[in-house]
Length: 297
Image 1 (cartoon, one colour):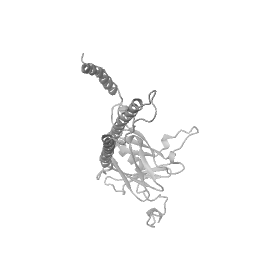
Image 2 (tube, helix red, strand yellow):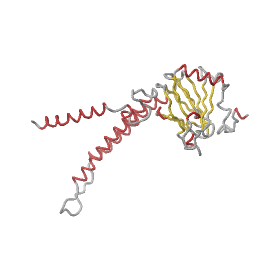
Image 3 (cartoon, helix red, strand yellow):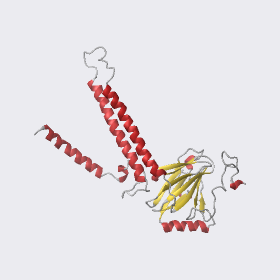
Image 4 (tube, one colour):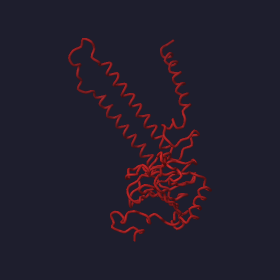
């Protein structure tokens, strides 16, 4: 049998084995072991697949580059090793123009490629919905969270809110999940969250959503997305913000639209209505202006 045909038959089992292994991977494994994926493959948001794709494909490229580099290093160590009886230095080469060009052009292509794909995805992630189904204000504070749900037109006149406390633990150090601040979101509805801080810089991170954004003092930041799977998701502050930073936790509940509206009615019945964005800020003055915050006049 010709050598090419033998090689072809030798590669075939490897291809079949690779296909079988990949077919048996769970969605979590196929998405680089990132959070936010379940067995049926439904992502947590409309952007989760895109973020995971950028992560996994970047690692695939880096691993290929690594394997080639390690292989060349190993080959050079073996092929050019000092052999028995050899003395002195090996033949020295000043340069090799093709190799110099290769080692310059390939990294340049990689850097430009990584930048282009990252910029493309970031453009999508940072594009804000102008007319969202749900408008929410998330406010970070040392060391908890407040959430304000604005009206249908984004107005604060008929807004409702909830104010949270920092994570509480039992004697064994376990966090009481029932006391964590909870953000409610309706499934399959466009959401726009305005991110604010009452004191220092915080970072709003819903882990399974694979994205986080900072919260600045006196400066609004926004995040738009669509939750696509019902469930309860963990959130936390991702910016070191003081002594109890690790206890600045919250939960996110993605529920049906009817359950979401029912929750808002519960807040309304408890009298938690109106605008709380400024009334409870710790800072007496707006940074850089000397102006007194509305709630402190």
